[in-house]
Image 1: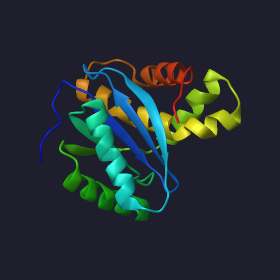
Image 2: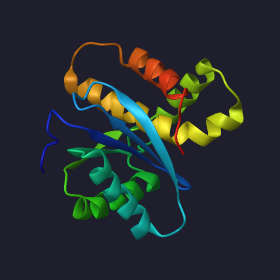
Image 3: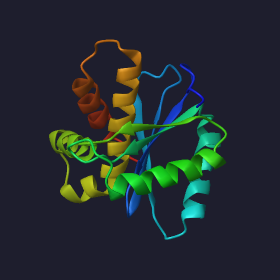
Length: 167
């Protein structure tokens, strides 16, 4: 398995049944930012090609994909499906792909969005991309081992991202 380089932009992906949230970090790999939400249309190949295109668009050096483990840490049906998508993406993208435990990322994203204010309708539109930013930020924090409070990073980043979310 190839390791994601420690410098350069990394894309975070939150695979959902209806939407795919996307986030990207800065080149120093310090801060994840929500990027966009891709709405699933039923064509997995086209959806994968969209993610491959984002690697080029961001000149990314790696991709981190959320693995939806159960609260007990086991791999349930959703995780098995996500792993199949990860395998398919690894065959297509020209950069290393890693998985990260995404338990409670949507809950963290929802909390951050609620704290940022705004309307619930707006939250629904960006929740997936904010969840992708939360999972990418958690991967960045764990990888950096810098001792910074990850929850503080997530809340600050989600609040900043609410100012100009993209669809």
